[in-house]
Image (cartoon, rainbow, N blue to C red; front, side):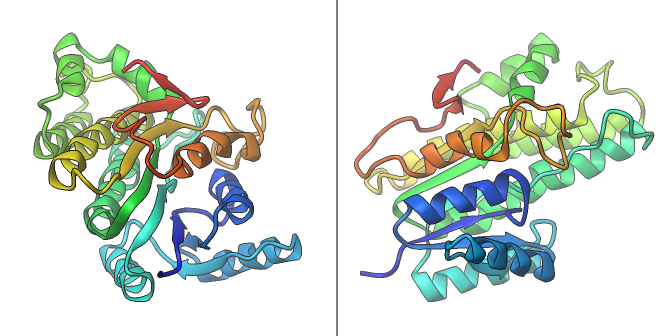
Length: 275
């Protein structure tokens, strides 16, 4: 029986680190901190070790395709795949940031949507039977979806939406933002929110795909909202601690063997949310 393994992206601090900490306590298997910066990642492993928790580290920059492929090959070779994958890495510009909107749109979507999709493209095939995949989205995605034109809302909610169509929609947002025409195209003024609409919709598409291609493998794939959490990204005014933010992602990662739901859902506070 090969050792079970959990991989959390962007986990050297914030919610990602809190997820790793909880998994170290609750998951029987190896738990990996991953981060693009080796020094920061290894420091996080040392900090956990000083709490009596054993985590491991592997370099992983989701914006670097070679880094993703190297990590996927490592986990496939050492563990035969992964049992838990939590796509937590993400970015957000601060509200006060003066970076032009078109730049914010491109940079935010590149990491939060396109790089997360690259992770799933290379890691989903190595998720083991009984595996759990959790994509950290945001309650902002549901709010942002409701600010899209009715035509866009319909497409994002459609059970026929394909991955290629979703990718085209995300590219369309970026290209219209560059021309300053995103509002005319029915898009809202939130790059972060739009990126997370993409993550939630992608989760639903890939869950349908997994059910179709691997119907007997019992894999569950969901998107979730950790809530508004005090982190470097969200600021110190947020009501939740990182540990509280980790609760729903960890709940989804540890759904018991044989569970059939939730799957392909958007989950917040351990409850399936409307989309």
